[in-house]
Image (cartoon, rainbow over the protein chains, first blue to last red):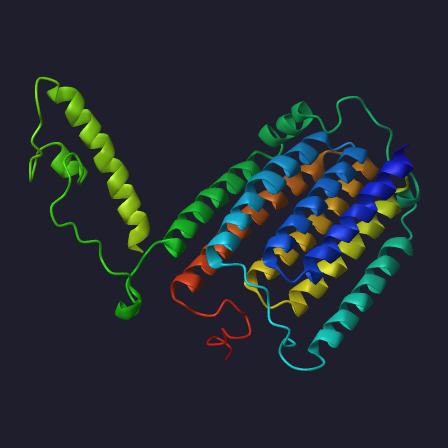
Length: 231
Length: 99
């Protein structure tokens, strides 16, 4: 059973990888990478790495690929033109380079004197690769890499916000026209107006509190949507 | 299955990813091909972890997973920033830092 699973998952992984490189549309390249990642998770399971396989599917095929799909949808995801990259011969040269790299890696892997890679590996002990095992390792022996990785994630999140936020330097003619509100309809506006700081909205009747809350909610909705359209 | 089979798959996927980084021009697809290479490295790390019956390789693979997620985060932020500035999303066109 294991060899059959290995060949299905291995051929799927290689086919997915080829799909990422060959397919022209970025959207389909992302989908090919998702299938590649799922096949790779199956290989991880065959290697008794249960937790890493689950993390692979959840983090990669779930979260990261959704991020990719969003960015492809935002950027437009136009297919690349057929013009060869850099100049004639570079594509052929890079394919030759990749072939040579594959040959070299295979020689290094299969021709090595390591005897253990011709075996199925060490004996399986119960509990190897389970979340308990991984968690114990992460919080005892590898506590510092764990904390360093969490700090790296924080830095990456801050960096992404800094990179993607709106900033000066844009050509003014590229800016979309600002949204001009003449006379706002009742109950819309900014949050500051909602609490009656400026331009107080007339509130009708005895249900003043409820109406104010509703106005505030609407105001928040309007503010966020106009912010979205603003850039 | 012998461990060498897994290492073979890993080597092939790594070379395919390297070919993609060299041939494609959209930074989005180049990031995808980088993911392929990182995943190939992950596969061999986990194969060696299985070979020794030791969990260290799996921890290493998880750290690589985190680093890949950070790299995607920053890379996609750069792509969005490039798009905002109405520049072509093409690594061949962006050669101001070419030297």
